[in-house]
Length: 135
Image 1 (cartoon, rainbow, N blue to C red):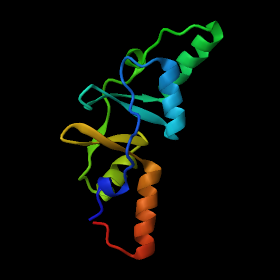
Image 2 (cartoon, rainbow, N blue to C red; image 1 turned 180 degrees about the vertical axis):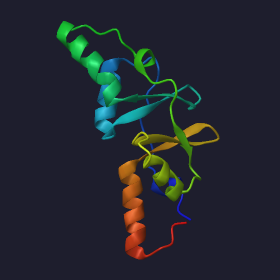
Image 3 (tube, helix red, strand yellow; image 1 turned 90 degrees about the vertical axis):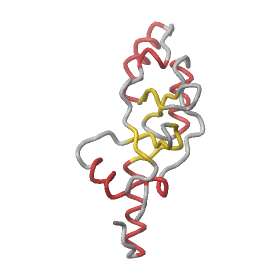
C-alpha cells in the first residue's frame, strides 16, 4: 500500500509566526508550492499560509511601502494535516472533495513534509505505469 510518506517532499524552510510578510512570501515563492506550514519552536504545525492569504496584504503594503504584518497575523489557524502513514488512495479521495491542494505531513504531531495534489497524481500515475496495486 502506497503511503503519503512515499509521495511527500520535505519542507526545508517552514514558516514561523514571527516571520515578516516579505520573508514568508520569499520562502513560499522559493519553495514552488502554493503555501507552507507554520510551525512552533518544537516543529508542531500551528498554521498554514498560502499565496491566497498573502496577496491582499502584499497589495496594500506594497502600495503604501510599509508592512508590519507577520505570519502570525494572517496565517490560517486551523491547518489541515495528514499522517505520513495515511494511504495515498485515501488522501487522493479526500483531495477530490474540493479540499485544499496542499497538506502538511506530520509524524507524532511534528512536521515532516508537505504533500500536494500534483505529488499524489505523480505517485498514482507512476503506480499505474508499473501496474502496481495501490490499495
